[in-house]
Image (cartoon, rainbow, N blue to C red; front, side, top):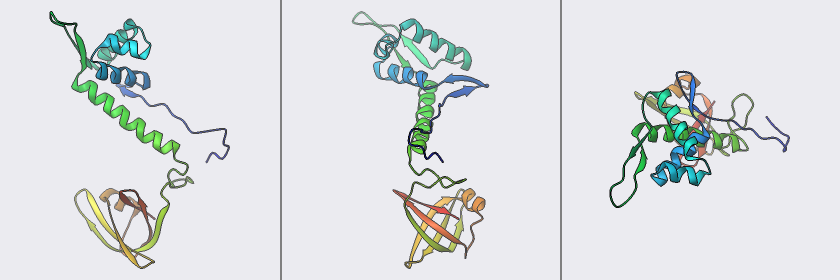
Length: 185
């Protein structure tokens, strides 16, 4: 764990296809700008990039994926054309933003996860005993009697129950984080 205040954890995220990078932060910014502006030239201007750079970047992605992520259309008598993200373009941008957001939260959290010596960000923790486990197809319901005495129910994945080898009688911690309760063993 980094204790020196002069340092911080950081990482770069990108999406690959067949082992080659397709979009990273810059590509996501380009796609987001095109989505907002509905124009490649306006997106390039907004980002302070040349139209040629953005166009070539989009063509490189198209070649790598063998499918367009942006479609252009011609304008009529009253105005110029424009551009919009294809379903693939929206999907790539959404995936990138989701992963980037998740990693940003993990890395900026002063606690992070209590795995291999890292601390857990959640501070509402209750030690207790598992009094019931109901496994469904995908999720499992784990009832924990905490020492107050209060019983807390967490709905977690069946896989998590199996990975943690949770069974009735185990001593665990119920960790309350905003809208969910997690289980630690």
